[in-house]
Length: 144
Image (tube, rainbow, N blue to C red; front, side, top):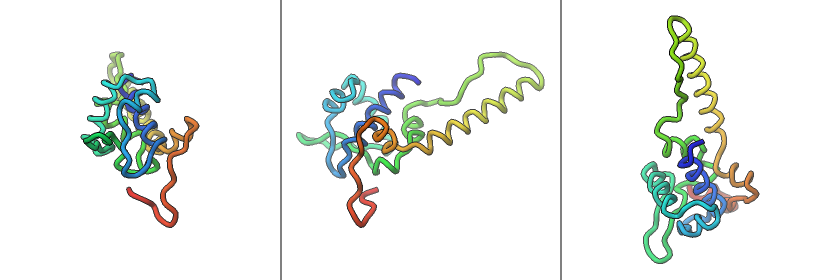
């Protein structure tokens, strides 16, 4: 995985782990907890904001927060926002039916990967990292 994708996943995992609706997390705190460079995280969070996955809040108590609950954001959405071309690229040159077969295989692999990444949420990643995102309020789904 490319480093920008890894940094994006670190950032959103941390936002998921510390998810409290309406409570932003400072880039410096995310950087300290994840070990990612703060300047780079700021750039990554801007890209995620442009895709409406995170929101930024200005001011002394400002920072970034997820636009939806962690269980409603998939890894595929995050990677789509960061990586311009997640599809595999064949380097080999093939002729005739071989090229078509390789194209077919490549497409099947991309579809399989997309399905897997769409099924994994930020809440799943946070739990896997050993931290559970805040549960939605009792009796409701909470903000989406």
